[in-house]
View 1 (tube, rainbow, N blue to C red):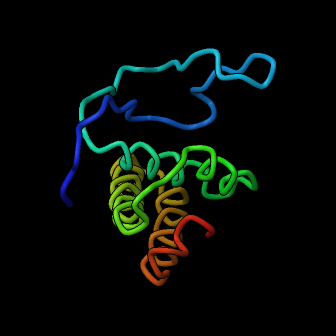
View 2 (cartoon, rainbow, N blue to C red):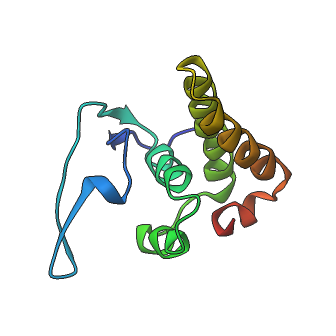
Length: 116
């Protein structure tokens, strides 16, 4: 996937690493996996971590315009990585959960991936 401009990526971007004060983002924590890359990867990581969160679509909407094809591809890649990582650590139940999400994501059309 071509990247128009590299950005600073958090690497573990999800709601538990975002500090909020009076409905405003006041900070972001846990930057130990920060790197440069495609910002859609951070969005995909957040979408995978929030796969069961009822506010998932609101998060995506709040993020702004995102290339849906790239997002779909990154969600598949992040989910696969998480599945293998959990399996390697012996957490079979979590690996199976990621496997099920991986399979469901593969079946989706890219424009539907954010509404899963």
